[in-house]
Length: 66
Image (cartoon, rainbow, N blue to C red):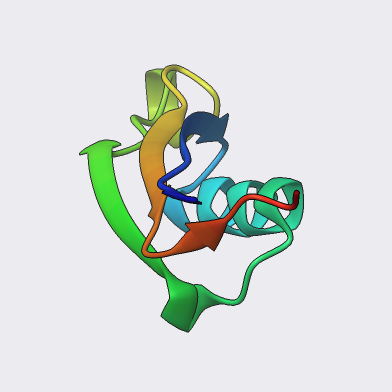
């Protein structure tokens, strides 16, 4: 049986969020579809962390083990 797995992950940056998601799914970048749901927003005076970046990662193909 083939299933698609989709997860949403937040990170300080889009790049960090993608990296976390790929590690969680244990899949290479070429085996997933990446959607950026929101970019990170800087805080007051450019300080990081006002709003994290959020991405949705969906596997292109996943075969369930029997």
